[in-house]
Image (cartoon, rainbow, N blue to C red; front, side):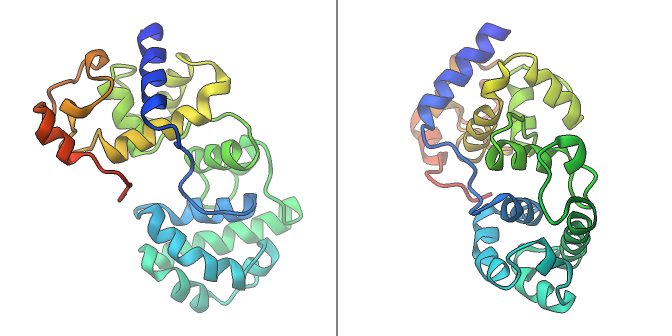
Length: 225
């Protein structure tokens, strides 16, 4: 399984040489905010609201003292804006009170912040601080099960199962590659099996469209979710 998993990763990395975090950010605080906003919406939509949000509230201290109604208005296009505003304000206050306004570099500290779970923490660690982490979002969990790497449903169990198959240095980039593949080819409802570069390695081949031409029409050049 380990050899097959690593070969799958190499092939997918070749398909998506530009795999990366698709949230726009300039520092760890901005990435933390953007990742919280990304729940139940697209990265593109988040990227559409964060320039105005960061211009108004550039750091944790500014956001901690923000006007709630103003934040809600700015982030409304991302959906669930009241709950997200609550998380952002509480997270910023916790950063100021417990970490002097700085985003901590340790997972065990990050997950103590309101609105921050392991998925968000691993995004920040991997992409803002260069600390390897596996981000188990819906795409990564789905692909790990389809590829036969794990049968687990719990995100933490999936994270540990994937981590056992790959060197720690690969974890962050692996997450990006899987997310790119999940968004562009291995869709939740109708995967493009006939256009998949790892079809011969995938035990779930045939779950989606296998005709090469029809499958190619399903492949997205850009992510929509």
